[in-house]
Length: 345
Image 1 (spheres, rainbow, N blue to C red):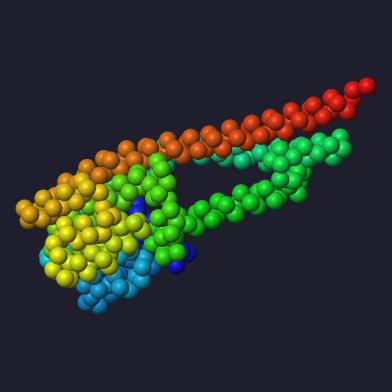
Image 2: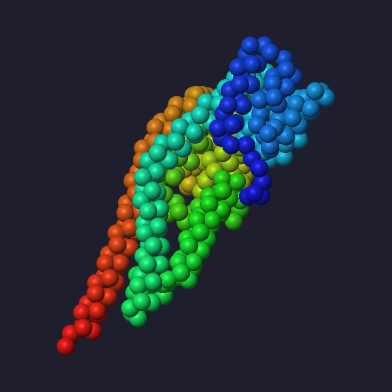
């Protein structure tokens, strides 16, 4: 569910890193979890960590205890923790997870830093439009001639109320869609597919998804997970409908005895550079290592892709602002010319 509580990426990165550090230092896991309960902020996080700690105190393994937290932790975290425990590499797995989440946070910070100024400009434009709607409505009441800046009949106090309601509804809708995409809800898949077809936007988003996919392949294969399970979790980790749609077709191919390369090729959904790397890695028997290298390459490309996306976002905001300004100028000019004509002898 969209409103259900889930651990943030920043909290998860810190949680994984602390657990890895304590385990590598030989601190008993029960002691580690007791400390985590004490340091967790009041609220959902403390309740979930307390449930983990209680289950572990009663003899459950870490992977078994995670089942008592519902979907507070992502599915990939559940699966990698279980494999990490089974293979005796829990500390290393948790450190790999922490590094991954740190990379995701770094990308997010860069994106937010780049998009901050365009968003401030958009907020100023929305504020100025609202003030124009209200002020020109007041002027229209005193002069008897209404000036509709947007041409939508929005003037005065009532027009301002309708305008702000519309802006608020759009903002809530956008945030709901973003959160639903992050949760992987089924109804967002058509939206994701549509966005991927947009020129200038689809390719950067595909690169970001490939960075997640290759990292997850590196982690799951390195952890010793079964091939079919590793592929399913890795494709889910991409968080992109273009790739998650291929889970069942790829699984069928692998179950029928196909190689990784042939299974991925059969979908016609993956770029040539990814397929070439996968083919070479499979032939050399070093899939995990190759996916690790490819993940770092895609990570660098993803950073460049984010810059491209923020540039497009900035241009889109400028286009909206310019359109509004030009429209307002023409409306005000028309009002001014009308006033002159009324006063001509």
